[in-house]
Length: 547
Image 1: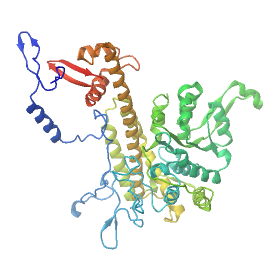
Image 2 (image 1 turned 90 degrees about the horizontal axis):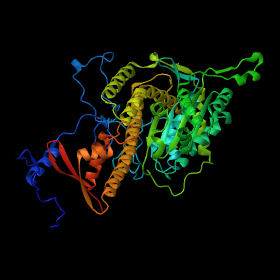
Image 3 (image 1 turned 120 degrees about the horizontal axis):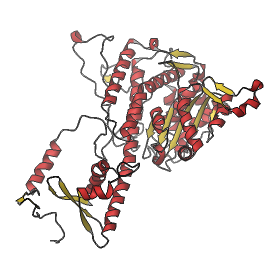
Image 4 (image 1 turned 45 degrees about the vertical axis):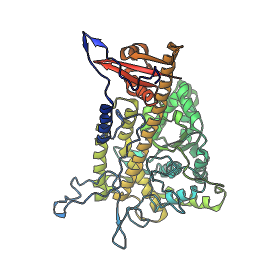
């Protein structure tokens, strides 16, 4: 046996006041502990608070139809008879069986069935790397667009529809609005996140092609600009669309420059469609009477950005928290399919799609409380209740939890926007005759789509946190090995580690005790580079090893 191997022999416990307290457990005790851990039920809390670093994101939606209550005890729809979270509407087939994915069912707007042996997009073994499907109405022009772009892009369907949803928000703004605590535009901010080289630009291209056929050049916004230059732009056309498939550049500018920080804060107000005023003395010479104030009654922007994981968390932005709240996130780590030769965007198919989306510009109206059917109103009340329960269950101690809490606060309004867009796209397809009425099935579909965006945000935070923990663990081991250049292992007590590496936890960016013992040491233990050697009372000794 290697004399330096302590994994199979017990060491004498240190003495305290003449009393020897044994600590090293026997092999039988260790086996019993592991057995109890495996039998321990999973925690019910769906948040990431105190979850393992590599734990999968939560899955709020489980498509299992709930058992209906007895008919005599079932309350009326006007009472608190709320559907289960993300309940899939079920339609009756000709044989009497229930189907939730039938294209002809009134509520079964799930993902289209895969063709030709493809893997189902929401299958655990699907190659897209998504945590949940982003469903859209199958009887809408959104499904027509998705089916076409599947021949162009190798990314999962959720990322395919992200740019076109932002375009739909622009086409409906400002003629269709939400009366929800004031008139709100249907602007959408979507964020696509993939590793570098996964062809985000190819996925943006069809939506950009359609946008340029439907919109004038002054309707489109691109690149970086100062706040004053943006004002000049929006003064000419106050409702605009922006696609940024290479979003790393603009996000880095927002992080590192003073004018970029000012512009990122402006994007918060462009999402909400608030009035925009400027008052500069230099403007006096440009206006008769010496006036210097300029005002835009309402300025709106629909936005879709694509970036890599490194900047997608928006951590370095002063307005990062507000932007995360407004964005819907779409994430993929792998391709969903392989295309030998992408479909051409110069054929008649892209023009036919553009004609279908042009129909959205003919709609005009206000969606309010009276636009809900009784069933949809009951689902809306349940959606609000579920959202509040989720918000209350998040401790909000970490930046990731605060980010999720902020996004949850915006989720109901975003669900409404998605539901209105879904109905408009169904109307443009000819599937419905009344695009201004919100039904229960489309509202449930919008909730499921938004929950998928929240899943992507959780996964994004988890991925970024894993990378941070991995980097910090490597740094910590390098520091310890540097303190002992002639050794391959070293022992540190908990007090030694705290004094050496977490003595200045109050400083911005410094290593904290909770991160040291809650994330970094567990990661080193998992990699076999650290183990607890002994524990006597509150004194814990760790052994670090390296090559």
